[in-house]
Image (cartoon, rainbow, N blue to C red; front, side, top):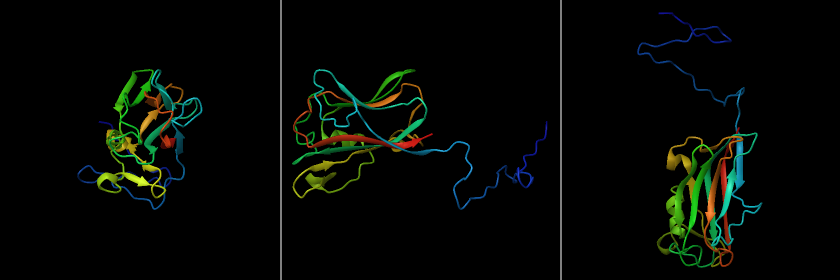
Length: 207
């Protein structure tokens, strides 16, 4: 057996191993100041051709609104915020439209393993709430999960998808730099008319 002593680089004091094999640690009153790798806040709209407005016609050809990996930074998407605003919207509709025929599809893609469908056939506001496990339970009864922004106008659902809660990812879904990976919402129906607002934004960190 080769004995090894681990010492502090400043004080040269050895690391102490206690009687049951545990190591004592000290909690600092401030974050680390000299990290070799530091993360920064990240946010981005899910976009298609430079637009974040998901009110498009995807009935003939599905339209992918995505956040894509970039060439020079690693991105971790932890939270996705969806906004669907439409006067008179209820849980059983999509906005205030009838339930969609095909629905929105939510997927993750990486060239190594292909496309992973997280949820398909999101046809109603309720379907989005179900995917968004962390959605705040505002209101009650027929107004459950709904915010009335204008006193009778654009009734709004704000589903929140948290990858930590749903899949246990501490930092979120990884879009590795230069990988071609992406997270995508496919519009598979004609949403070009009839909904006041439909957009989606992702939040996380970049390194």
